[in-house]
Length: 291
Figure 1 (cartoon, rainbow, N blue to C red):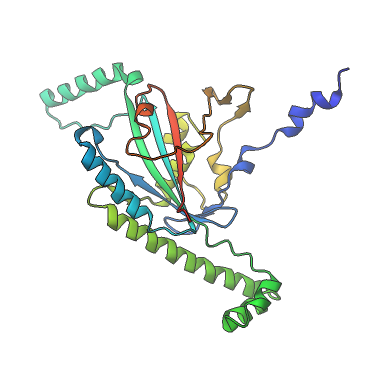
Figure 2 (cartoon, rainbow, N blue to C red):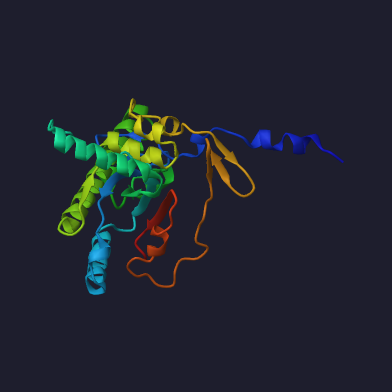
């Protein structure tokens, strides 16, 4: 028997994509805030040319990067995003000399003819600080009076005043920003001699975050940060369809693959064979300090 509820099931389950995006807005020139109260920044990494290095050197660099990650305590979570795309625009410059300019244009035309098989790799670290999830309740505030009387009394007064509550949240947010900034600066300082990395401003960070939700090159290249808030709304510009065996994002057919279990051991270039696949894809890995 045909049930009307089954017919309207897909319609009832549809919703806006931005509801699933846990991003709120930028709080300064680098940092963004999530809906769950996490602070984050985006770091661009140039990577290391592993093809010219031997196994001993690769192992040494990997251990140095692992040591740098240990600067982040249990309140931090790091996501690595690797974007592999073809048909990327190759930057060039003309010098006003006919012979040189002709050679440059011929070279560009040669690469344009092979654009489908030429891929670019981009690597970014998204560093999240989860220690700012300020959810102090009245009971927990009263219990904290013997240990931190001044802070607890300030929070107790804030429970009965919206203005004071805002001041308390602003103070805690400032502390969280300082904590995250210090950790990121220390990380960049520790890796700068072997791993080129830089902290992105909010305009560049917005474009990187946009790549995670949009595949069309035109939408990514023309993206521009207009407002510091409502990032979930402005990042979601593609139509998403869920099918039994794949996703469809605008005119792109997407397969999502995940590891059922983490690898029993880790070693340099564990995903090396993945880099050899001639396809457009995003690789997302997560790192969090173990207990």
